[in-house]
Image (tube, rainbow, N blue to C red):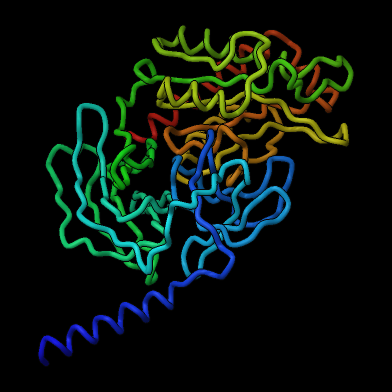
Length: 393
């Protein structure tokens, strides 16, 4: 086959690929913007909003193909769509669609604090991450990307990353696999370089499995104008109780030797989820515990429960629940895929604790007892300690 024939065939293939990846007429391109931009799977909603697919970095390129109510429909790849709040997408007429987007060279390395996987791309494309178990690994889908990565440079400076490889699971969806050395997921952060079109996946290393050496954050739910639930008989507000219990938990952890305990609020302060998340990202804890109290329409409903969103963080929530059940509270359950805002960050293991039901008269009476606060704090502390011990086996 001569060179002229090869050039002709290449031109035909390129034209065919461009046609195959063509987006619907009427689309436009934009960038993510504002605090905590995210994608949801569909248009369904509940009191916590739609089921979230992923949080995204700013300036990620979005292809908007439709609009409904206060959300845009986003085409991620040929076969994948998602939805984004209109407030998180800024139209950018300077962007031009390309027939294809490629991945380029990779680098895997560590510095004094974290391990990293960096992937050069021809555009800042949307992504999502999935924690996987047995083996413990992180899968990251890069939508719209086709591999042109012919080498992955892996340095021996990594301490948590065991291996890195990829799979082209669809013509325009590239899946990155990052195998971890430990069974527990300690968190990850995904963002683009502020200048280059380089995706950076930052992997948190396992800290010392010693309670006293952990950095622990506590979020007292609600606060300020966000009153939360209300006691059925006492009319006490959830925001008041969460702060009381959080302060006792902080004291209990410090008595157990924990030197770094951070609270998102210490007063009756109004804080948005974005503001809480910003504080937590700055503090960079090893663990986050959110304190809440439940309520139901019926005063017969009772029980304690814990909540997580990502499967890799579930062990922490189950260990705490096991300890809370020792207080002779009914088991209301361990709830996964929970769409609460502070279960959303992937940067650190986190668990939300619903201590009990304020709408239940007997449980409300226990919750108001100062001695019960100390017992709950002691059980949460023991749950964290039990979780750490399980990771050493």
